[in-house]
Length: 188
Length: 188
Image 1 (cartoon, chains in turn cyan, green):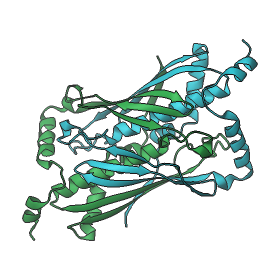
Image 2 (cartoon, rainbow over the protein chains, first blue to last red):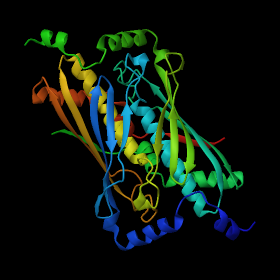
Image 3 (cartoon, rainbow over the protein chains, first blue to last red):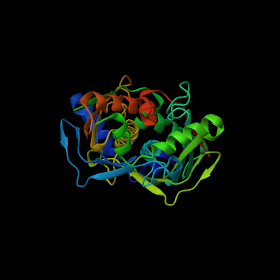
């Protein structure tokens, strides 16, 4: 099977032609690439909150969606909470997994690799002496994160490894987690 | 109204006594504070994936939950995708909002401040020239994040500001976003 044949037949559901077109369009009009993503969070009770995701700003305009999405968060019963939803840190791990998986599908598509299944297990280690304020030398967040991919695809192990490496290289959430970002918190 | 009266009457749904007990217990048995949080992600099609959050490791044992939770992610139609779910970066913003909001409820409870409503708007700026690979000097993640709280509570503006500041100081996701974390990606 030649590369050309693979490129023509692989279908992972990613519109690579449209993405390449968007890239060309943005090279000509870089200001359209300035996006602002949003979440609106409402405290429910205790440690339970609900975030709503709807519109965002991008391509020079406010972008509406056909539907809005909600993401609830809570703490588990071992923290004396009601466990109505995943914890905020599990939500971040889910975002990381989703970002890398979307990247795997897009990069594989571009390389003509047909994916059959992609699963990722994401684990984050945390010493809760940080968030409980027991030890000021322990950070509040994860001490380490491990992502393990299980990929069944029409490709060699080396090709799969290269696809995952390229996904990391272009992943927004991988960057957010591995590098610092300034967060400004204010009260209206 | 005295501080003591406020402490006795405020009820934000957070069990502060249990959290203080957990803190004392962990000071005596620090190894119990080593947690591992997990998400299992399955690629659906295109940029659409589904993460499942169920058990975690903590307090020296595997902790099951009464239910598992799913968090889907996708890309929007402006990226030629099907917009079946929030983007991974909006999921991270939701996790940040949920983490800070849970902290506000817990800190307010401990300080005897009755909350009536807490809303947070979280915005993240991103130049998509990064993720599209147009400009290697543009990062893939957020260039800046802004969190704006609207709090209605039985407290002065200064007290509300102090509660939010303490929530930041103890927030796992605030730490994850503002500081770097090592992420190891492997293929099984």
